[in-house]
Structure formats: C-alpha cells, structure tokens
Length: 227
Image 1: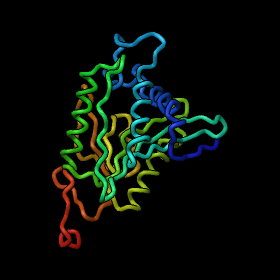
Image 2: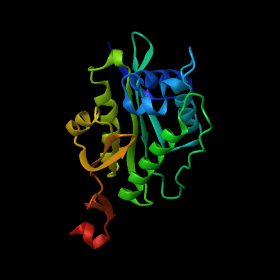
Image 3: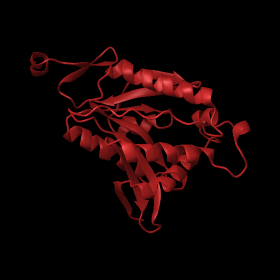
Image 4: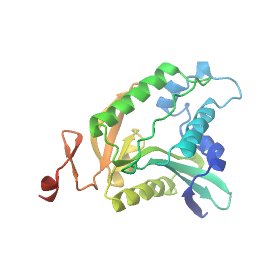
C-alpha cells in the first residue's frame, strides 16, 4: 500500500475535510464534541466537513505560508491523512490574517470562541508578536489508516523543513497526540487548558537566535547567540 506525500491543491479540499471529520469524530473526540454538540446537528449533514472545507480553502487560496501536505493511498487514489503546517513569513511579508469565520450550522459559537482565544493566547505568550517558527496547526489521519506511520511522516516533513531553515517548530498537542510528538523530539513547555481538556504547548528548538526562558521563546542578540 504505497503512500504518496505532496502539497494539497484546491481539488483535495473535500477529501481533506472528510478525513478531518473522521479523525476528529465528535463521538470519540472531546473537543469536537463541544464545538459540534449533538443537539445542534442536522440529520444527514456533516457540519464539521463544511467548516473544515471553508478553513482549508481560505488558507490554500490566500495564505502563502500555509502548506497542507496530503498523504494519498496510491492504490485507492484517496487522501488518507494530512498535516497543515504554517511556515514563517518572509522578511518583507506581513503575517496572514485569517478572515472572520462565518456562522456555520452545527457549530457552538461559544465553544469555538473559547478554543480560538486559548490557542491564540498560548501562541502569543510563547512567541509574542513574532511568527518566525513553523507551526503544525492540524494533523489528521483517517482512522481506517492509522498505525501505518502516516502521521509520523507528515510531522517529520515539517520538522525536516524547520530544521533546514533553522527555525523552531511548534504545536499544541491533544492528550492523544502528545506521545507521538514526544517520540519525534517535541518538548512540552506549558499547558493550554480549554473546553475542559488539558492540551500541551510543545516545541522543537532549531533557531540559534532564540532560547526558551520560563516557557517563552526569547530572541537573542548577536553576542548572546554567539556565546
């Protein structure tokens, strides 16, 4: 069962959304259960897939720093996993500002708002206004294709790129995903609690011009970096 890894295109968005919905099924995922509560769901409508498709379309169309890598089962000709990495902006480039999310049927806006605030606050606490790091926003593998190394390979792709560019790599791990990230070299630097779940800020240090200090990334001057 050969798996091919490549950057996503607009044609992959629907398949990506389906994989994300399957990987983060509200029946088994406590965060999605809060954001997509059962009482707001309509029969026969995959509200999560619609939401995910909108988010990925925005990024692929408008964010030059978003790289969504897809894993495709060549025999099935089917997307079975993906990783959404965000690369640092170029020196002359303004960071991407995501458009305001429209209201989606099936989404609890208070739960979604709580999650957004917690994530953005955690990133700002660690990095300040700087975005000179690689960030893994989402890793998803279809449950039918788990334990085949797909998630590991999708994460490793971004880690190799961050290491090559001498940039730190960062993510917020779910309790379920944390062991994988630890095996790949990520170190826990703080808790990110929201929606009744304890997520974890994790980092791989590659940037010689930064250091960790009390859970924050501090930029060094030339003398400090050379010491």
